[in-house]
Image (tube, rainbow, N blue to C red; front, side, top):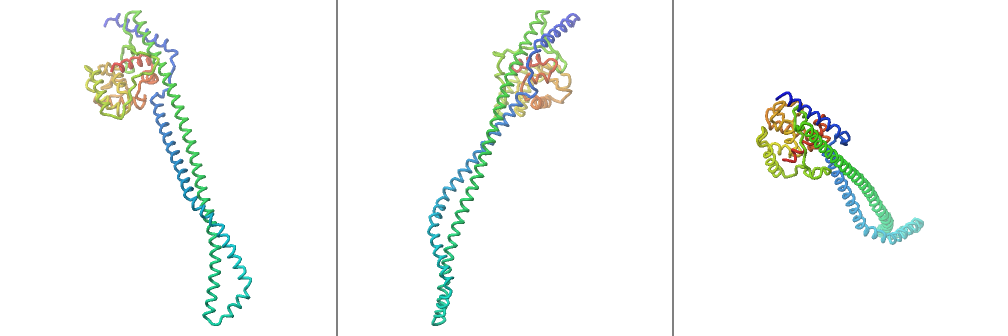
Length: 373
């Protein structure tokens, strides 16, 4: 390469860097928590709402159960209340009789002494005992009925009070969970809007940089990747940059269908590169960690021309200072890192973290490659 060509390339890169930096001075910066992280919080909040709803349902069922018990016991309560007047009358008569027997002790003695023989005496004593026993039973029956009524009503009332209190607590917990979920939904909507604005600004900056480079020396604009390589600034072709990416991919529950579709698409994208044939590895790792299956392959293209220019063995992504013994091992490690540190999705905040000096060009170029898979 001639010194003149090298000089032109450096000037072109300088134009790109200056142009992008100036254009992105007002780009909104998202918090480092990725949209996927907030989505995970939303999932947890939704789970809390479901649990709160279940608690409310259980509390409602308990109240209904106690209502049914009260209704079932009402017949017994009505029966007890119906028996009370008669029992009260019997108890009153019995008490009156017992009182008369106690007051007329002299007459009772005379009655006993008037017995003609021992058997008549025994019969008289037994008769008196029966009368007193029946009178005592009448009084005891009244006390027993009154106690049963009071205990039944008190027990059911106490249980109902506790059930109503538990229902109120469950309703309050559900309201709090729903409020937290709604707040997270609003947060996600705000983050999505900020992400869309950041992406639009990054794409416009990449376009302007390409225009500046073309106007100056007709050079293809490049930028320095995290791995230290020079990569071409690519501009994604989006129908509406104002909207969030309509093609965000999140693995579903059907692993076989997901791996089958994306391994074929990634293999077609990787054809002819050192990473050729690794579509299944990328797809399986993406499904396992909940990542967009296009993200890791697209980063490999931006960082190392799809594995052609690796700064460390099998490190096609500018991933720290790591090296691996095989592509399979490297792919699994990289996808796991994207899930843990970047939410498994491409965001502008993630680009600022992955490639801080040239986040704008890196973001636009990775997005352009993802859309081509």
